[in-house]
Image (cartoon, rainbow, N blue to C red):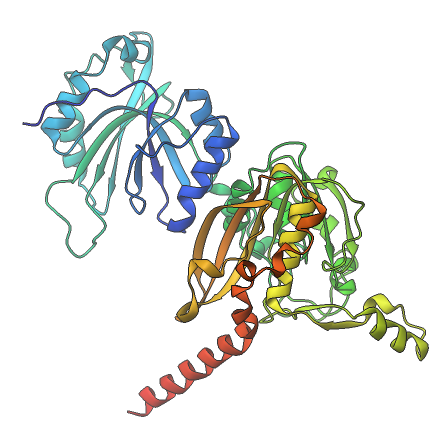
Length: 461
């Protein structure tokens, strides 16, 4: 039998949802730093596993993380861990009794639960595993309905559903501390939202973005491509004051054709403010303005704690900006319309270079920019991620859109104060590789066309 491993103070077991795997580590790392902790390179984690052992300074910090995370299900104070039942029992016997006793008092109540990943146990098997822990000094009474303390046996049977081992690869035992915020995914579902658009962000990803941005109470969060305000909602839920801009007058004012099926026109109360009101968050809504993100309307200075946005890729929403001054003047001579509504095409690369420049200038020091970057996968290398000397790349996570396209959630942090010489830094050679993706829309639909043709050919066989 392998030697028992002493579990140091502050060691916790995190149980994660097996969804958005690439987004989980940046979310937990960001939340740790938000609460004053630090993610150690020595952490015992396998990135794709649902079980992570983390060193967290305090139970209070662990609870704080769980009040925010949508990627994790639960967290436990880890009392024992082993690669076999014998190793687990030896680990538990080595855990300091004085740290167990406060939760095992005669006047306390408890229950033990079992969670298995990639395997289902019978009730008899579960009872046998619980009975094997009789050596632990439980002095309280069992209460299955409303116990003071809940303890968990967790077993990992690997990632392959077609090759499930007889015995688990890892076994854990711990005291339950808190659950994550997975219920937010359902309660904030876009399907139930009052005002939606063609590109309203999935609720889970919205909360992940707010967590990557380390949004906290009393922050000011800005979305320069605000649309129907979906990204404002998640930030407001965490107590931030929110605002945004969009070039589309009808979207900002909730006018025109509806995006919801079986509804032709938007109702009189369909707007961003109504969305926040729906969730009791209206007090956090500052305003949304009709404005061109390439020509900021804000006064100079560091205004925002976070910029969280989903720029248009030209697939469901057009990429456009107001025309040049010459175009505006020429058009205005023969028209009474306000020239702000004259729009011209807006290259993808220019959208992102303008966004980074804006973030470098208007974010507070340590503030974060979180945005989606569309990628044509056959041409992707990390070098094409747009950069700025004032911004440090924190994380880069991929979400697949099709076999050949994806979008990457980019998180950057402001680490240097913006100076006049940074004004056109994106024009340097090191900031232009993404320009090859200006044809993303054509490549996206080219791939769709090829796939449809292949499916039709296969069906004819």
